[in-house]
Image 1: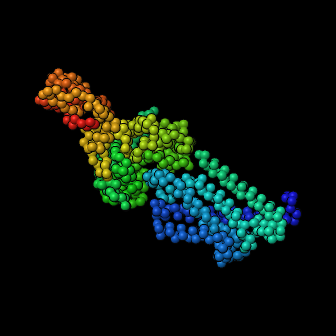
Image 2 (image 1 turned 60 degrees about the vertical axis):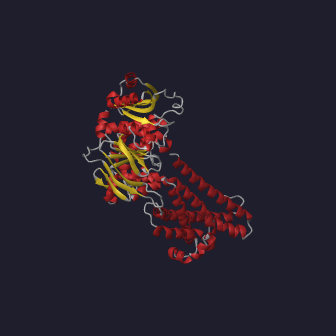
Length: 221
Length: 363
């Protein structure tokens, strides 16, 4: 499969690639699930929004910023009790998803919020003038109009998650990054390191191209 | 075919009460030195097209946004189709808004929806079933000349086409009144004329009640029955478009009217005229021809009867709606009593004669 590697490493690569894919996929899925409502809430409660409320907006914004400003490696360790509560353990690939999802939720929520802010205020106003409810405005105007921006935000988040997931080795999460550190760096196998880097580059390229293609498809209308 | 469409689209006959009645609207934005609206009252009768004209910053946008409470006035009442919007709760207001169409300067179309999807949007919001929505869209598309563009996205449309979609969307739920917020201000002159023609046509066919705001007197001239001039948040003049055009009172109104009537005296004209002869008076008169005598050869007749030299320094013949009128600026030379007699005679014919100061640009 990979001609320049000893066959025994191939299984390790396969497993690590799966772990990376799982961590990135699961964390991104959770992040979008929680990030979109969070972004809508941030957007709606902002001054001039659909339901302005500083009492909601300020603490929520602060929380998101707090998560975002904590370096991921620290966040991972700092929330170990929470991880244990959610995943039952603080070690392993599954456990690594918890801090990844948390970091990605805060990250994607801000990006989503920016995408929502790009929606023309006039269009929202037109919907109000037609007698649309706030829920209709969210479902029929804000989200569909922001869709290209929302998709671009998911792409950026996926790519960032690939990077974060390389740190998951610190909690026994495995993955390609971990493989690179343990074999490529600690066991002096530069060919392993090179392969890890190559695979990650291909992975990120693939994600980015897919995301761009989707955004372009939507943007063509 | 067209008649059928018109019947199908005509709004329910409105009561004799005004379709829109704004009373004492006042709105001051926080931190602004002056109120955007300062006690504005006006009434739009059912079936009437009412224009509000003003410079930017005069308060027109705030005014029209108050008419469907997109902007809530600090004081005053907004009654539309007999309903006091200021007294409605959220749900009542939403229901009322479904009976008020609005056309926007920047179209405000949903980029994520096709032409048909945009036109159907207000119906969707109102919970109209899909089949009914589609039938209504099919009815509206040819009405605004967009039958071919049904499935196009707004990004592929020209400005004029976008505004046609905006107009169709505003009419989709058969609103009792239509609000036009600078509907042609983002369009080039040709497209503006096209959209004005469309609105005039729709207005005649559907007997629409329209409140529009604009900064262009040409829009008022093309569409409106009555007009109000807004300045610094107050109505400084209002009346029938013909009257306001032919006898503007306020200075601002005169400037607006001059944009489309162009009756100002070209620079240098007065300086080039001869001085009055010995014992002769020299007067500058502005004569408005309107009504039954607008076609009479008044100038040559006055000249013969009173022995005057009448020099035309500027003139314009025009029509508003079907009413023709003419405005002439005359330099009159002759014995002072003869000039006075001529003025009295012209006034006797029902013409409006103003004495203008003999100064450059005094029109």
